Amino acid sequence: MITAWSFAAFLSIFVLIGLSSVYFNTHSSKDYYLASNTVKPWLVGLSAVATNNSGYMFIGVIGYTYTVGLSAFWVMAGWILGDYIASHFVHRKLRGMTEKTGEVSYLGVLANWNGAILPGYQRLAALICLLLLTAYAAAQLLAGSKALHVLFDWPMWAGAACGAVLVAAYCLAGGIRASIWTDAAQSFVMISAMAVLMWVAIANLGGVSSTINALQDVPNYMDWFPEDLAFPGAFGAALFALGWLFAGLSVVGQPHVMVRFMALSNNDDMSRARMWYYLWFVAFYLMATTVGLLSRLYLPEVGSFDAELALPTMAQTLLPPVLVGLILAGIFAATLSTADSLILSASASFTHDLMPKNIERPFLIKAATLGVCILALAWALLSAQSVFAMVVMAWSGLASAFVPMLAVLIFGGRPGQGTAIVMSCVGISTALIWRFLDLHNMVYEGLPGIAAGVLVYWLAKLFTKKTTLAPALNK
Image (tube, rainbow, N blue to C red):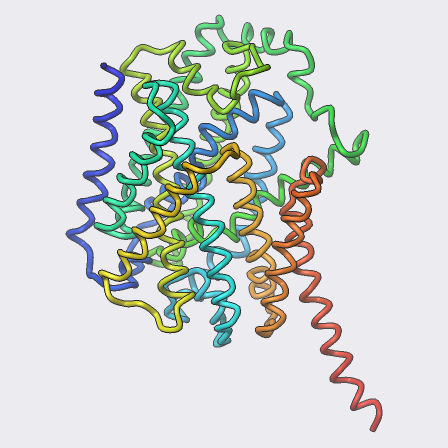
């Protein structure tokens, strides 16, 4: 009972914070999707990190680490390093181009970069976004439902429905401003919950030294690389790490994360926003991976146990009811902070990028948001995939579709509409085929997907040069 009251108290705070944003709403599409570019750097950083570190971190990463052991640290290292490298090249230019184009959506900025007008590409990209962002949002609702199933024995549908109702309530009230404000509050609960569980777990094992010794006693669990590498030796290890580096680079292809930086009040404050983002990101990911390792000591039965239930099960074992409520609130906060961002970005794809004319009426914009929320809930209830698999699939698909285009634009390329469409289609198709053939066990599918998209641009550029040079040479 105490756990339920503790959990309900945190959720009430989140919802009230989100609903309070209605008083600042100017009822325009720019305000609904970009908060009229008035967001402070610390809010941008904390909101972006909460959006990025979703239920995937609490449920997916901990479950993955529980299964594979220390080699999961390469996922963390590669992801953070790739994210950091990408941010040096992209964030400031994307925010500047948002202001220059006057667009309110991530896809709108890409399609109208530096005066280009690519309506066909924008609509195709919107369809891709709608599909993958909805799948991604479904994964977040599923992650929350798994936690509630373990702790309260709720049926799986109930937790997902609860999350969908809460997200819809404050997104409809304040749009992205509500999302950013609640994300910032949720980021504090997320990192506090993870820190408490890590500290209690290590203390109960007798301290750091005793914990390390216990982990080393688990056969093959503290190996730096997994046993099933695609290639033996250093080459296989490097390929494994490189794949996760590209997973981090893939962040710039995620509309729901990048729109936070697009909403920044002043482009000169980008360094401060990135500082907040990486301080929180590194600390949180390190603690999450550590908790994943510790969960194997407390829950040693690997066979029939669903690894993605490791964290809530471990919390129930170790913590008093009031702190279990904190952990559950942290998990739910993580799922909500990403689900709301995904649903708003998918809504922008529909109202601003897919439709022949931009929808500006507040009622229709909010109706689109509600429709996407219902679709995500239905997907969550019908899906048989794990949270980890759903997130990685959506993440790599978005990256393969949009990172090649953004990278080419950032470095001065100007693909035409036909080239842009082929880049996205080839990129995402390569990633999906890679996963279908189970080659993602060798290397993260985003790497070949992004590489294929960029290769299309260079081949198109080379072909264009030859066709323009041939008539001149024949004269």
